Image (cartoon, rainbow, N blue to C red; front, side, top):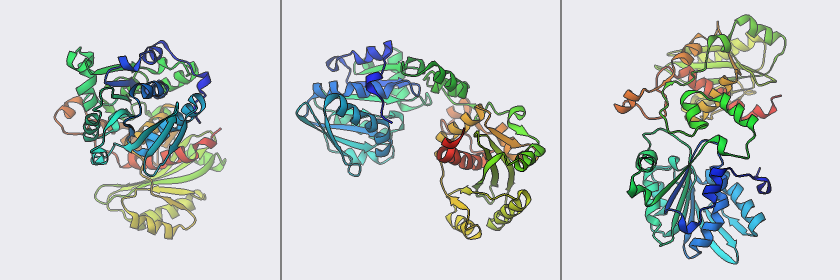
Length: 430
C-alpha cells in the first residue's frame, strides 16, 4: 500500500538531507543505514527537485537488483507521489523498462533496469544519463556500478543511492563509506554520505521499533536496527535454546490429539552422499511451528522418502498439505507428485539470506518448537550452523555473509518448509 504522504513526518536527520539543494549536492550521494529507517521515502521526495535541476535533455535511470525490485521498492511509491502531489502523468512499460514522466509540462525519459547480475552492465552500454537512482546499491554487480557511474557525463549529473549495511569487506564500504568516514578529501569532493538508524524514521511507532529490536541480536541487531557495516560471525541462529525451542514427544502427541495444529506440511532437501533431510511440521492458529519428526541420512532415495511420508501419515493419522522440496532434483519431485497426487509439491528455493532472516525472526519470537526425541539432527545443526570467523574471511576460505557450508542439511530443509508457509499463508495467524 502506498504511503500517505500527507501524513509523513521527518526527523532532524532526514530534514537535513531534504533541505540540501540539488546544486549543492555532491555528484554521488548515498543514504545508508538500517532497514525501515526512511531512506527510500526521503529519496523519492527529493527526486522532483533533482529532475528540475538536471533538466530533461538526458536519460534518467532507476536501477535495483532487478526490474521487479525497483518496481516494488521504488515505483510503487514514486508514481503515486508524483501523480497525486505534483500532477505528473507517468507511463511505465514493465517489459521494456521504459518509464515516461510528464512533469511541469516537460517529458522526462527514464529507464528501469536490473543491476544485480554479473552481466547486467551490458544493458547500459553506450547511453548518457544525467540522473541515476540505485536502490539497494550493494546488491548491484560491481561491473554495473562502474559502468553506471561512467554514463553520468553531463555537467549537472547526479547519482543518488540507498543501501542497507552488509559486510565491511563489501566494495561499497571499502571504496566509498570508509574513506569518507576517515576524512579522505578526494572521496569527499565527489561523494556525500547520510547514515540513518531505525530511530531516525519519525513515521514508525515506538512499539514497532521496540518489537523490531526484539527480533535481532549481535551482528543482525547492528545491521538491521543501527545500520552498521559489521561482519556476521558466530552461530547463525544464536538465540536458539533447548529450553525454549524444544519439547517432549508427549507434547507433540497431545497437540495432535487436541487438534491444536491447523495444518501439516513437509520440507525436503535431497541428498545422497550428502545427507538427505526431510521434516514434518504442524502449525497452530497462533503461528507456532512445531517440527514433529525428521528423516535424515545418506544414501536415501525417493522410495525411502515416499515410504517415510506414508508411514508418518499412518502413524499420526493426519493429511499433509504440501511439501517444499529442493528444486535441484525435479525428476524426483515428479515422483513425489505421482505418489501423492493430493499433496502439493512446491519447488521453491528461497534466497539464503532472506530466509535466514525470516527464520531468525520466528525463533526470536519463540515460534519454532522441535520434537526433542524425534528431531536430534535438526537440534544439533541449530547449535552448530555458523558464519565464518573474521580470520577465515581474511584467509578467503569462505564468502562474506554466507554461512559455512557445513551442518546445513536440516537447516536448508527447515528454511524451505517454514519460510514458504510463513510468506504464503502466515497472514492468517491470530
